Image 1 (cartoon, rainbow, N blue to C red):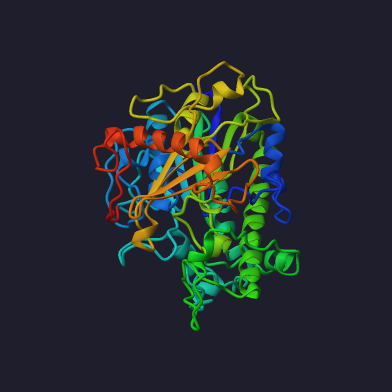
Image 2: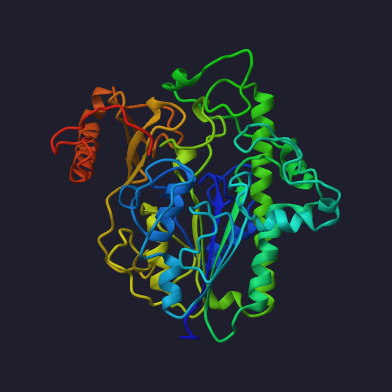
Amino acid sequence: MVDRPNLLLITTDQHRGDCLGIAGHPVVETPNLDFMLARGAYFPRAYTEVPSTVGARRTLISGQKPFTHGMIGYKDGVPWEIEHTLPGELAKAGYQTEFVGNMHLYPPRKLFGFHHAVHHEGARGSPDYVDDYKEWLAGTQWGREGVQERDHGVPSNSWIARPFHLPEHCHVTNWTVSMAIHFLKRRDPTMPFFIWISFIKPHAPLDPPLVYFNQYVDAEIPKPFIGDWAGMHAVKVKAVDPNMWRGVLPWRLIRRARAAYYGLITHIDHQLGRLFEWMMRRRLLHRTFVLMASDHGEMLGDHYLYRKSYAYEGSARIPFIIRFARSMDLEPGQTIDKVVGLMDVMPTLLDAAEVKIPETVEGSSVLPLLRGEDVKWRPYLHGEHSACYSPENAMHYLTDGKEKYIWFPPSGREQLFDLQSDPHELHDLAADPKARKRLEMWRNRLVEELAPRGDGLSDGKNLIPQRLRGS
């Protein structure tokens, strides 16, 4: 049992798949995440099955599709009962399991199979909820003077950006890594461990420490991608909502938001460098299998959209990187051109630990792909989200990472993008006669995908438009 690899799961919240150095981003610096590829693998075609936090996290720790686990959109406060979870299966198999950071599952502080958990849920939680980061901050010099995490006044779903108002070591990103190290110092050395480190950033508030804000504020920030179909979202108003989900913002505001967002990502990367070095010096890192992913992305003004819940690349595509334990006979430096999702996290980690994968899991381990085995992989990934910011936004999408089909049940509208020639989804091919056969092929795939669900969206022959309620 002790010889099995330790497991480290790293997640970020609202982290775009293109915001990595190894993804070719022209500005963002992520040296520690990039270097995982030298001893592991990178999956550039990774997507979230439900591009908002609660549903994505259910998918991650259950290995199930959103429709199966019951959260196809965003809704706080919904209790969840689940028999087989990633930490639960590992605990039963002899792993010591620990959670640190932002879980965003309900009820708050439920362990979901972990032996122990240290929480920070940001602005969420009932008045009775005990937030470990806030409790810690209250005990610092600044906390004793009455200063709190959100005293900078920036909302938690806003494009407004500014540097963090407290010293860097008080930032929740630093605290998250410190709590992870605290566990690793005190773990049971006779057991392999599984720790899930869940960063609440780069989710807004967009408040990186000053040094990371300054790193990007004068950089050549790329402008948003605006599709030739996106005019419907180009809403112009005199008074701009600080929490807007769509509309036209002045470039100077988008630029600051992007600079702060990139700063939050590099801050996380540097703190991971701190963690990796600590583990390396204690000969833990080479015995640990590491998987990094995010729950969903952030539009950052692409197509005049902000935040998440969309099928577009900025919202649905996520990072997915693995670092092998030294004992695993796998070829490092692999880039795997298969479409993967969050439901693949649980079976991959269980496979790495040589733990049986429950039959309730619908995802697949990626280890056979890394071993070069001749496996039949999924031809596409299905994602969905119920109505969120607007009833018209409810959507389903299919992608193989090369093409993407989107269907909006409230209106019946379809979109088709060729991601190979048009990676930023600038040209909608749904009305192009030359793409008619491709559109029909993808539509038929979605008809087949939805037919067994019995929710009235497919009769097995056609998609059936209808106005959907929130999840």
